[in-house]
Length: 518
Image (tube, rainbow, N blue to C red; front, side, top):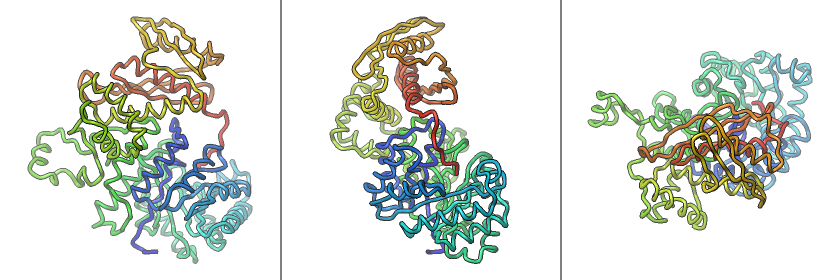
């Protein structure tokens, strides 16, 4: 490959979904995968096929329906994992099997309970088995940053001999720093004699807020693939924020000197699409895509930007597809304007779906005059949630079913054609509505008496007093944590819907899940 070309490997659909509360359905994953094609990533890690039927279906459908990038599926070294990943990737024009095993002392001793020689054997056999299906095989020594260097070099050499075409070096727990991680990559290039036969990749976590810096240090030391997630989601504190890696390489090409194949104008739409589909608010100060990324508060800065934006901006909003609020829509904007704005936000819908969205858009425009981008995300999110509720026969709560006053709340909860209405009382309307919802759900036969409300956050959007209130609710039942998010000009109604969505999410989360831990 071109020594100056860096491969961009997106794992939003696999590692990103492991972020607490970031549930993605199959339809949402396909939507994101198609947007990743527009973004121009080189590899899409579509999932961990053996983890669940949903993961298998996602990998299978993306393999068959999404063209362009390499489609990767994750597998442990177990034969059944490899077999299931092969089945899921069948039909992909450019498949990749990504297999991994832990190599740090603590993981081998405490988790695997296997000696190093056995771990090497497992890795080699997994790569050979994967290689029998496709030429493109990636291997990751999990927790590489905390692994013994000599042992790491040995296993890397052996898997390349076995046919691995990419060797990924993960900082699984975000333990390393740029100087140390760069030295580790340099060490492997010096110590592993066949290292030139494979692409060296890096996969860094953000526990110490160094994932992007460590990834770039790896590239400077010789790595030619970077793995990360859109808006930095992922296990614990997340993965390397992929758009930040990309814009470092683009904005500072004078320093790094590398080429990538990403269309940076698709960064904004991709970030907003992912955030909407996982019901997450993008932090205002998140680099590249946050609402404040191109905002200037200080008078001196504003004066400089007015004279020449380059005085305080090292990239332009347009270069990253940052869609501001300068042209909010109104109810007379029409379907074409609505469809164009949705496309600019990363949503590609046919006319039938646009018609469904348009009805809710007009209702909202009547209520608050101007409809902003975040309002459109709300409408799309609610449409997706309503479709999922109908498909999965979950609990449903409509605006018209919510009644409340000081210390009083009443709701009608529907599931699978049956309705149950209940009232509740509390110190305030939200507490009263929560009690009413719990009573109605109990009437449907679900025992959630041990449910605990773990978090409740309200964020106001754009538009003054009539702005959408975005509410995020986190609930826990035993060892299961779930999240619900909704919006409405009426904060209490938004809170009630977010609470019921969190309960739906909770009831969909299996008690035990297979989890990848890269």
